[in-house]
Length: 306
Image (tube, rainbow, N blue to C red; front, side, top):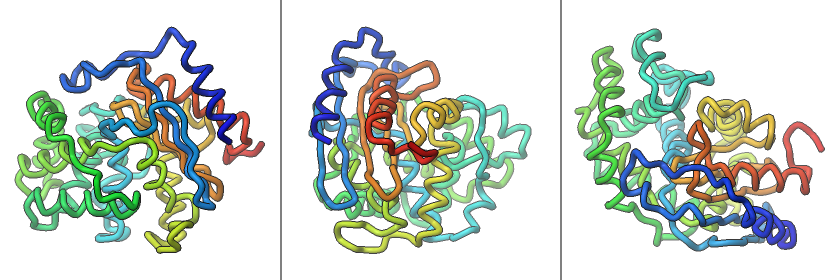
């Protein structure tokens, strides 16, 4: 595995087209796109990594997988009264479908859906309490209490989050938001600003490798059925309107973030985290996707067969 990762880093390093950083969030716009990292956490506890795998980055929408998991734990299938389970086919910050579908987001991974999930898990609590719960859950999964929120990124998002505020207010007009919109948005922007490195992120995804149980600690995180459902949603919706292309090229459930990270799950095999800040035209890490495609080609880990 180490040889495969070293080869991927060497190959990726020669690429001239690294995509574009997320320039609509000022704090992300100034990140050097010439960075790359990959970590693979195996089901047997071994962790392999290459590149800048200990460099922290903003996980952004990858955090939506963690908040969905919390929401399912709190609400069970009642979550699906708040968000749907279908791919959107539209950009992650689109308001068009909300208007056609009476303010109910298509899935929990587009921005509107994740805002609705943030509202759902607040349950009358203040943003700080909810964020502490989210952060503690991520720390528990990664077995690392040093993980924190990048407040600079969060403030950058708050100042430039007019589109997300529009989505939240639009949903509120249909009665789909139960808490003050400002509180929900503060929670949402801050959980998207959790900073992790690839080693931490790969470990945090391990529970989805082994049917809801951390294969190393043997602690059950979610039921096996729920783990499969989270994986299925990541496969269908985890890359916005690029989800079909990701499934076609990589063949693994995955969740991307505009910070350049991708968490991918090879069920029964490994949790993989990649990071490269340059994004493709639909907002997914360009080199990260290429790296995962190469990894799957060499390991045969596609869920669709060797």
